[in-house]
Image (cartoon, rainbow, N blue to C red):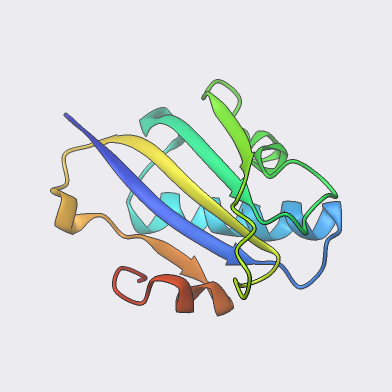
Length: 120
């Protein structure tokens, strides 16, 4: 079994904890579903959030989904002028037999514009 990385992102409509939980939960669920993964396949998840998001830790949404024994970390995204606001990004390390080209990277809603080259 190989170690692979899965990318993803979602843009929030507003900075509210419940909304963040909902949107990040949807992103993580889509990543798992589109890659035929379970929580057992996860090695670790790195979350970043743009500096305009303060309401909660994105990792809290993962815990609410039942991802409880996977190392998670949150960091702040670079504050680049003109960057898309209210974005949570994910980098998940997984165990998978899929080749790199078979990994589905998930960019929900407007965040699809961030990586048109790999968004599915």
